Length: 356
Image (cartoon, rainbow, N blue to C red; front, side, top):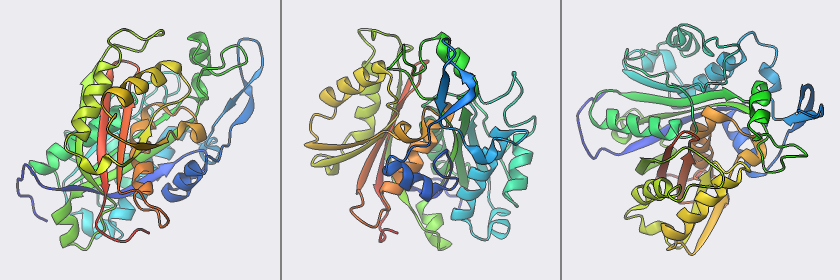
């Protein structure tokens, strides 16, 4: 496997894995999200402050697991790596893998580590032969983490510091309804602009395009550009400078992207909270005003608010859109905004092969 340094080496996504309330594998889940299929179910054990059941998007398959976040993460990671490397054990034993997992502050139960004490050991069991680099990351969760992890992965691949990067996240807000309700962020009869709690795990695999091509691997999307900026934490009404960070991230990700001028596909983390819509309005009018038409997708309509899994899930969904058999998009712009400040955007393009 080549480990040459190249500051401009093309980086591609070769694998996607997802576990959501509308599908336990990537492409079925993405197809359900595209169709806006919902599985929001009232859960009697989850009550709002007025004692009414709360609707949530729960992943029922893993609900009875001792560590549901761990089970979801391992399933999604194994699917992503299996898609990239069908003969995983033989192929991965020669690779240096860097992993960025975002778990979110709410994925654990009572403060317990959501992926256990040794997540890398668990990951090796789920993906036989995976050799994880010791400086792999397990950061604290927020929406933009998946996109920030992708940017770090691109830097590592281009610097020759990794052969394959696995970037993803897992989170559950289903068990955090009390905190959401206390902050008036939960969608209820008395707070109609809140979120519907959900849970999910999602991962993408990134490689240098030359390496993937040399082993006969199939690129699903090409990473063209990315950008991020730090802004103020969310507030309502929005701060006067609240849209500047998102605008900076969008501008960096779309600079020189002439293909986006006619029709743009945008995948984002709008989830029903008005401050997110306000920032998007500023970004649309200030940075993306050149786009004549925008197809806007926000998967939270289907899977609810999924916290730290958001960034990777949006990347996986955008990759699906670039590989649709009927009317595939040629470009996709993904953006996310974290509650605590970071905003990030990534520009993906369709890989040069027929859609699946």
